Length: 178
Image 1 (cartoon, helix red, strand yellow):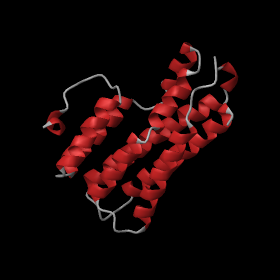
Image 2 (cartoon, one colour):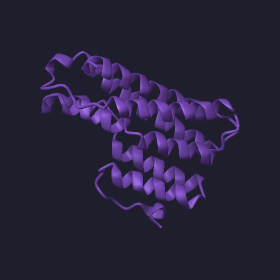
Image 3 (cartoon, helix red, strand yellow):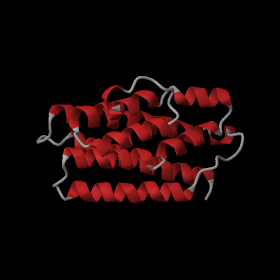
């Protein structure tokens, strides 16, 4: 698959993720804290989309094609299909949605986006990252939401594992680390 086609697949995944987060943020029968969290996640995805869409015009500046995995893209798409199906059933609980959110974030779309940006010269990559979300804030927001909205210890452990795997500089994790 060509780099540009892979980018378009990556953009399509990000669009699906953003739409899913927006749909969760619109669920009026959920607590306002939950809706706020998913609206913030949707905004992060909007920023991710902007970064990737801007890079589409700069593909000719890439030092070399990025090592993007079609398998990881397929995995992200499969996770999204399951999450979207659960949302359509209209029986999705906040805790289930948090679990799907962790699965989505673990699926590797953020790593693919980062690999894409790393294929550009350093200065171009830096400029593109300026339009993207702060990933430390993105993952911290997820941990804080799980702390506030879930009593499931397994979900807390998954969030901490996601944090640790994201290569975000270590910082105080608060209640999620207990």
